[in-house]
Length: 201
Image (cartoon, rainbow, N blue to C red; front, side, top):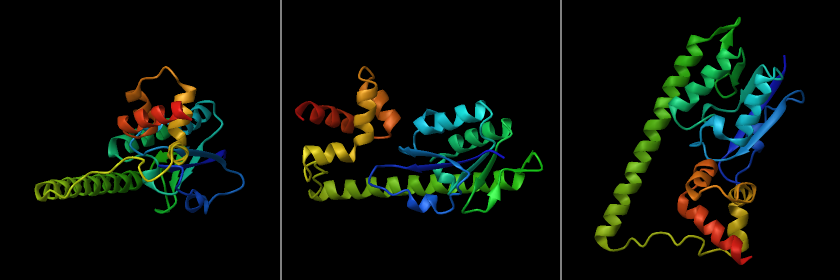
């Protein structure tokens, strides 16, 4: 069996160690530093893993948790469907489950993934709503000032924080700001800020 492990962190200042605890020497490692909001097939290492699967190099993929694949249920199920169609077994470590049993899709696995995906989406939506409500209340009281982007760090530190964005800008200099924002999982404003600071250094 040709094994791979897929890991994802949202930003460079996060650590991969927790996801690598169950790593085995015979696994090929694919690490992405990108927002979970970006579809799996649009991520650099996500695409590399899919290419390896298409070439027949991989038929077993491990992830630490479901949210490493994506933040919304549609993307997760789309990726799972791709694995199933390719005959690739997906193992989710924190569930202790595999997507296929005896070469057939594991319906219990898919049900649990669907439930977890829905719960995660609800939690994110609730958090977003609470944040917006808090901002509205703060604005009404006249105490909300917003966040001054990059105000607490030097230009060098800011670019280091968003080095994934810097990398994509250098790799695709003609790509639009919106496309870069989608690829890297940051806001359009952040991409613009990164571009501006790159010109001064």
